[in-house]
Image (tube, rainbow, N blue to C red):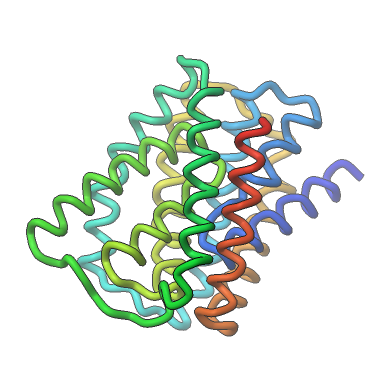
Length: 248
């Protein structure tokens, strides 16, 4: 029964995350803590399990890929160093103040998207020059630090930044987030946290399977439902993630 419960938690959390472009930690991480894991162990276990989200989403997006290889490599190069730094920081410092600040910022993202009715509805590439890439890369690096440390909902920041700064629509932005953040960023963070902290290994099979299938299912919904649906789910998830971070 424990394994079934863990599978259901993981599937639901990662399906919503794959549809909205982030937010799996909203459900999965708090419940792992509620089930009795200390924060550091729950974080390491969740981060490793979330890699399967990226695998499941990548499998689905390989059938309908619109990713630009050079742009994808740019996101990896600018974000991965931040992930490693963040994963080293989180196990050394208290994170409550940062969680509250991140929660308020996350809620603001959802409200911003809500009041910008046409945000992310059309693909209009922006800021692809040197200046734009430098500014964009600095922000992605900062989000990488958050991703490595405070795991709840940071993929949502990547999604909205790709839309707002680089002019992607929701469907393309979610694809980049799921494949690059879900697989490579989370994979790097998982390796770092796995080396530095403890992991609840006997819970991982159910969590990994739920993440894999949930990631595939959520990515399928994102591809088939279109930008308007993704935008609304993104707004709901950002508000819930922000409230969860503030309440603790």
